[in-house]
Amino acid sequence: MQLERVALFDPRSLFFASAVLLALFALSLIGEYSDYKQLTRFDTAELDVQVQNHYLKTKENKTYSVLKLRFGDKSFYTTGSKHWRDLSGRTLHVRVWTERIGFWDYLRGFYAHSVVLHVKPDLASNVALARKIAAQHEDAMMGELYGALFAATPMRPQLRQKLAASGTSHLLAISGFHLGVITALIYALLSLPYRRLQGRYFPYRHRRRDLFVIAATLSLGYLLFLGWVPSMLRAFAMMIIAFWLYDRGIKVVSMQNLALTVALLLALWPSLLFSVGFWLSVMGVYYIFLYLRYWGDRPLWQSYVLLGTWVYVMMVSVSLWLFGTFSLYHPLSVVWSLLFTFFYPLALLLHVSGFGGVFDGALLWAMGHLEVHEVTLSSPMFGLHVTLSLLALWRRRFAWAALGLGVWFTCSALYEVA
Image (cartoon, rainbow, N blue to C red; front, top):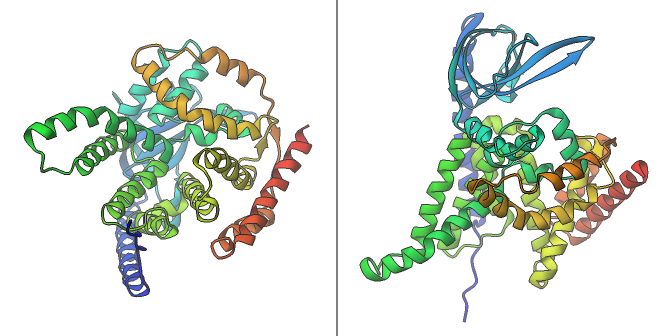
């Protein structure tokens, strides 16, 4: 007889965990406020920052450079001359005017006037990797696309807009799926040699636990290499918590697990409250768990197709409200997501072997035939869909209502661009 896995919290332990997390969140906020006061102690501050993105913007017939800069786990924007060479990935020593920076601006990201005092020659490790990847592609847009996929480097607004209109933005943002593939590949590659070594030298070891620790450590190294991408940080934390629960016979696929991960990350890094990528990642996992809650008993092959369709329809409202772009190819996101399961490891192996440009022709053809249309969703309608999605935690009929509303959003958008 198979034992049933137990739930993570009972009411008493839930109250205790909530109190601990609230106390941790308060301490983190106090620490953040102390750092903020140190930054704004004088009217100006000198910082070593890393350029996350550098692009040109035109406004009122004036063209200038926009730089997204990162220091510690915070980021902010500044502007400069349009004649600046590309500074992406460079480390700068800058003087920043801080008198207009509020505490909440400090947490969520802000704009500040600055002067570049010195440019250091070294490139950030992920940008250096992205440039090596780009060298395998004749077209700059393809190099940019694969750089985002494997090295989490920023894309130009034009490419981001095309991806949003095609419904494939989530495939390029490194998150749980990518981390899962990487961890699974490491686990599979090490499984056979570890099994042989274990049988000869240390048969007393727990093979599954040891392999997971090794794979998770290497995945953590990749996360540090990329620079703490919020969506991947959420995925990594959830992977660690999920294995810890699984190893102790506690139910893994549950909303309590997701809530614990989100609460713990927010308690440690309050600035994640303002990270769009973090919340998109959380919503994607929430909808996956919601499907499994009500329809997870279906055959595996059915769920493989239905789950992708369900997540797409439920996330359409987010896409239209946030990005405001759509195309006739957008619903094919379901197909691209299914194919991406095979494409991602294949593209990874092709780039490792030096043949990364194999799919460039097909991708450029698809990009060239993509027409981007502006289709927006009002905040009240988006709020209604989110409310129904949350109510679906308690009643299946609300899940059906949210699904129906998502279908209506999709059909309305298709009618508008047809």
